[in-house]
Length: 149
Image (cartoon, rainbow, N blue to C red; front, side, top):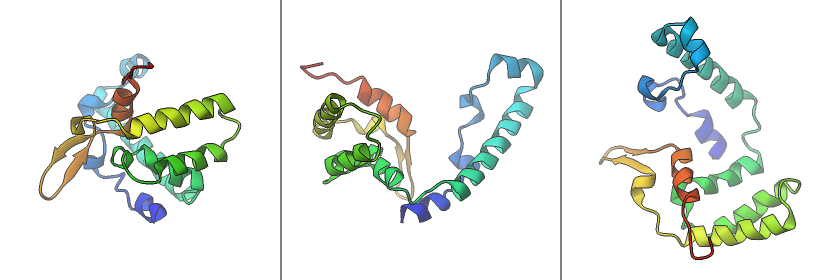
């Protein structure tokens, strides 16, 4: 199911891409190329990369499936702690036992947090819901503090 959804993403559609005003350009590239041409070239490059990744990545991989728990709407869903454990088990070399315990404790706290919708929900209309990028959401989550820090 996830595989099918990823392969159907309209990565070529401008509605699914950042607006030009939000595209970050490096100083060196900015000196060599006009902004409009640079952004057009960058977009073409990203489309080519997306096409390649979708056709070559192991989209059915369990790690990628379990990463779904990072979506804001998954915060209160049953079974996310179990899926986090499976994700951690799939990459045993990444975290120490102490870090695993800490991550699981923090996850339980996170699942009980009252996260404002405006951290992830950009616009909601009767026919379409638009979300902020997941990195914007997690930036806010990582800034949360509780009584133990």
